Length: 262
Image 1: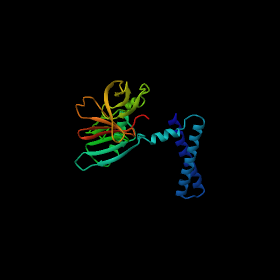
Image 2 (image 1 turned 90 degrees about the vertical axis):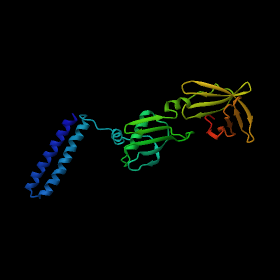
Image 3 (image 1 turned 120 degrees about the vertical axis):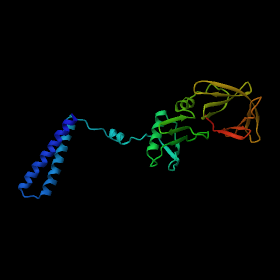
Image 4 (image 1 turned 180 degrees about the horizontal axis):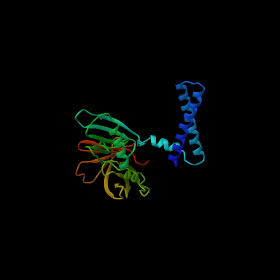
């Protein structure tokens, strides 16, 4: 039906244009003036036909939201390109900071947008993604175009992160603190006391749980040092007064986790 209305509007446009040109020729108007005024009159007549069709319900006007959606094809995901390196004949390397974890489909959309919006004519593109506030140093996800798209999520996926952040910890009646480890094999660490002893549960998004007991002693700074009774690997935790949990080993501090729950 839209096509029929368009044809009618075009016919009215041409008809009115030609009729006005003939009328103004009789009055002695110049060639250019006749056709300019005739075109304007035909255009207005065509618009009237289209408006009448909309008002009568013959065709539907496109909603403003639909027009805006069609004009905004890019994914509405906030990100910042931190580094973008390319030299002719070599792969393009990009580092990106995200405000949140993405689904597989969102990650693909953002990666393709970043690749396509560059003027670099690289045959291969490698993109590393990090998340604002992540506590581990490696990328959350890697994407490569070599030349086909491939992705690897190294840290917590969006679904696992949601499951862990929604986890109910109210069952820990003597909880001392909790922390989120958001790297590979991410989980929630819960420190609690039971019968006067300290334990840490590592709780995974799948529902799995590992429990280890720890010997505790105070530090000169007012914190708590926690280590397993055998401590085969020389690793231990320091719980600071501000609630930060630090991991220490032979090579020094390897982890610092802010409190997960107040």
